[in-house]
Image (cartoon, rainbow, N blue to C red; front, top):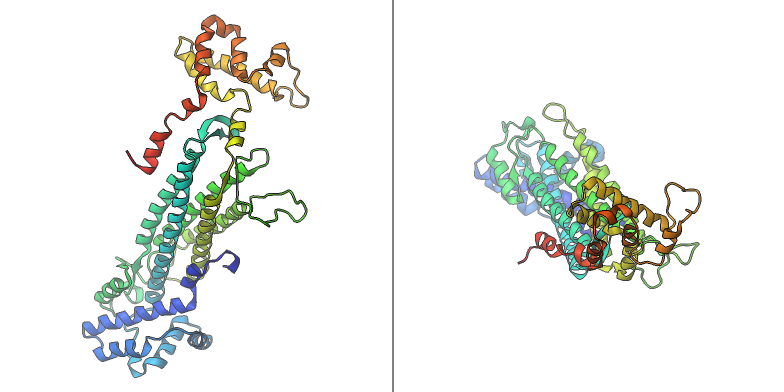
Length: 464
């Protein structure tokens, strides 16, 4: 992954030095187990630790690369370089093992290490979302469905919704981490014919893994598919939240925006611009992570006990997906932590269309007062459409400004245009005393729509 979208804490996991260190520990722990059960001399196992336990410096890595250019085999090159340090006891290293024992067990360790970092990242995102949810718990704003004004909600509920989603993602990653953390030291075609199962159990214990029940010659790739699919789901949630912020930052909405630092420039051409560059970037990064899911699913199908069609794929998607998601989660947390919220604009948006957001409230009121649902819907919809028209929005006349009748002209002088049009509807006035409806709509609309916010917050965050 390019440095622009990388953090060293995650890239270090995929560096050659870390990989070879894990390979070495797998071999050294296997030698200990082989010595304990009498397969190799104890002095040989001790020599592996005494002579081979050295940092994988640039010089050592270059030497391994040099050998691989000749052998065309990465594990053999590693073992050859290790033997140069261990000496004659090196003949006891890798007893009964196959390359996949080293490669697959190492990948499990690396993915476990990556998952630990990603879990910390998710904790930061969750903390930021919880803080902002509590700050904006009762801050009213208009809810939207299909991008269209629906009914009032609160900004706090927006943050709470994303908190709950990322909390589910954390639980998914905890399971994926456990599922991927398996060890295979079972030898050629996975039969343990040349290596005792106790060796696998010992190595697994030392590396914080569990033995793979049936590993053929490789760890089954359904585990890896599930792991990368989990990363893909998390990336989807990153984009979900990023898209909401991008929408709120649009000029005609401007309910919230990314923090714009002193000296920051929004456009090379237009000095007035404040663009949602971070959340747009997160949308793109999410696509990269999700693009790794399908190859991981396709890796599940291998020939017989083993082939290496999965190998080249994992050499790319494992570092790319984890590095990218690590960067994205940290960027997302920063966006949420510094997000600028505009409550005045939220109220302006909410009240922009003359109380039309209370249409369902009126519909239900009518049905509870002896009006059929069909008749109630017609009455409310008819008045609601006239509200739209009074604001210059007429789907029946899209090419020209709507021609307003006298009542629609008069409605422009009223704050609650929905009630105004309802009061002029003869079908409604024949069915219902308007004073009762006026009493309903004179109540605090925001309080009505937010009366159960506390209940939702208890479900999400707990508490009495």
